[in-house]
Length: 210
Image (cartoon, rainbow, N blue to C red; front, side, top):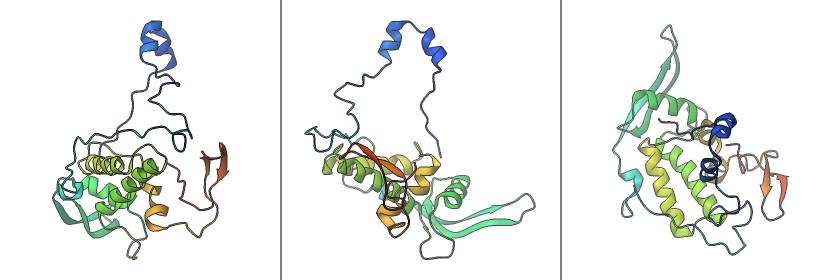
């Protein structure tokens, strides 16, 4: 899968540019298009419209690709099997290498248990559904546009136009989709937009490290 990252420009490179060029490349913190943390929800700010570009409003993005079952197996230098999960569901267009990496690293749950994820559908839905729901909850999208955002994000992940970094695949959606950590100890610190303060999450994975 492709890992998409922004281009990094050093401070020295930036300082060497003319002042006008530096100004053109800067996004103002006061721009109406860039809301400050904790201000969009409950402050009367309008949600952002989301344009559908890749997905089809009449077809689930999961139904726009062909699927197949295959085994994911990893061996060491001696040929000894160190990981194997049989019959996992992946898009047919994915390489065997992508299958091995995603299944061995990012599927949730212990092998051979009911909690274990068995399909890329589950993984991508878990992450994209949670992110889209967060956007609606925090006022970035309307409910309708949140569904468009979800479809677009799913489509991009399924077709390997981009991929999240590992902590996102590891952690996002475990609490919100599976209830993991619901009865566990306190979780990460997070920003509470209602109070403007940092506070400790009451459960693990509710505010995951990403």
